Image (cartoon, rainbow, N blue to C red; front, side, top):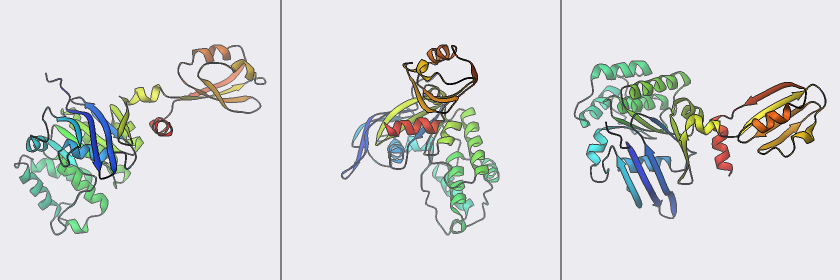
Length: 297
């Protein structure tokens, strides 16, 4: 069994003139996982994906895709990948079917047309429409179909659901789940945090050209700050909660405290046990709150 990473990047740097887009990106994506690459526009997500496919060259660092050096074996890498760019440019005078046949020809005609039609039907994409008459969302559907249609080993998707309505987004999510069930690996960039939270096994957060965190999605959420709301039957004995490690009082009223907790809750629970507690509620943060915390630091 091949246990080498499907994607490997080490110390990647890339500059556009005086603008340093990547400042030393390190990444490792394992076979069969869904990896979400999270960051705002301009953080370096698209630049990283383009380097992985040798569409642009880095200034420094090491890259391996499916065990290959994309600078030396770019054709072999692209043959085994499905790529959805952030902006897909289509020949406006051609029909969707003609465009997909052209993509298929470039890949050696490997795609099954029954499968292509099935993908188009599931996404509500009319194959007979000319590209010039497609909305932004329908152009995105063409991009999704061309990325998936040859059942690639690796999917590299740059903002895959941009411009799609919520129902079609859910269908795309299901198609990606089916691809991974068939053995594919998915690496997708996004600034839609709910999308990453729903799809990704692991998340990489990129900030100003540097990957600042990589972790399992749920691990990232679970180890972040939690909020708690405590309502007492009598008056608040706030001083008894002072000095508890990792606990901060965010707000208070006559009988209620709202707390922020970092780390384990054991000390807080023991302190609260001294008082008549009427209600105790805790909430884990969303991935969005975790993400914003990284960008505030």
